[in-house]
Amino acid sequence: MTHSLHRGIRTTFLPAGRERGFSMSEMVVVICILAVLSGIAVQSFGQFLGGSKDALAMSRQETLNQSLSRFAQQNYELRFDVMGHSVADELVVLRTLQYRDPNINRAQPGSPYVDPRYNPISSSDDSVHRLRWTGKLFELLKPGQSGTGILMNFEGTDFTTAFVFPPNFQMAGR
Image (cartoon, rainbow, N blue to C red):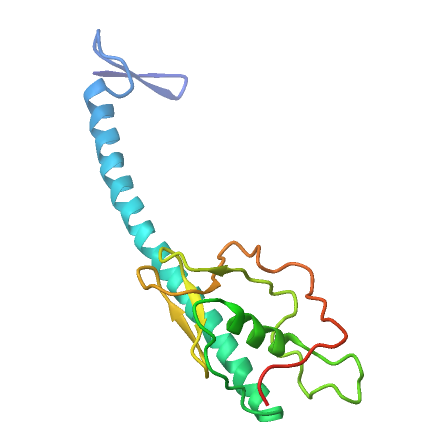
């Protein structure tokens, strides 16, 4: 390799047959390293995603159970027996927490306790997260556990237009 200086600019001359750039073997080594790193990253991402779904489901469970507590402080403790293998009990409790009497003189203080736009569906699929009513609280059913409950939707499509209560709506419990 030789150097020359022409008008204050230093230039480098490479020996004949040698060009600048990467060789094919260098490129293959770099691609292999990137493949190994991406394999590790994808595996780690899958573990983080599962953990974040657990955290979101537990947060929704805690929100509903705190709403039950606030409802009990203002009104009465909401307890009733589980009706069986349907999601009817979960929806009755949820609608009670979402209800606000249109007559301002009869409306409970602090109501609604849960956003009326929350409109979940039921599921008994044991590969997803669900919330089940126990007669006193909501419990979280994680994937692998059997049972029917409110489906935890992590895409946010269970928040739609507010539920419209019929004029003769009766809240659960008492």
